[in-house]
Length: 100
Image 1 (tube, helix red, strand yellow):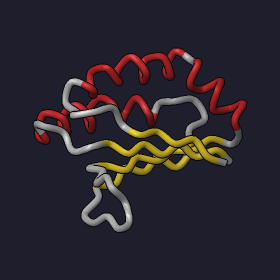
Image 2: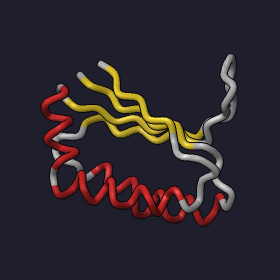
Image 3: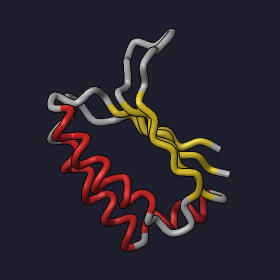
Image 4: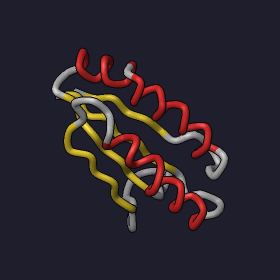
């Protein structure tokens, strides 16, 4: 199993970010081919970290090959294209971790 974890910093305009993130970006993640276990959590406390993410998003795939195919699909390209819209709200790009 491959898990993708995205740590999003606190946006400058939370309401505008939330409106776009939850109505546009999250559905794009959920529509990825063969995506599993999409989870979006807001952090309320952080320990032993120098950053305080606003949102921790996680989703998984059966393996790397499936992930690569999914992210290369039309749905994956739409997801990547929307990232630039998110960056307009954020003080810096999100941290993205790929793990298995």
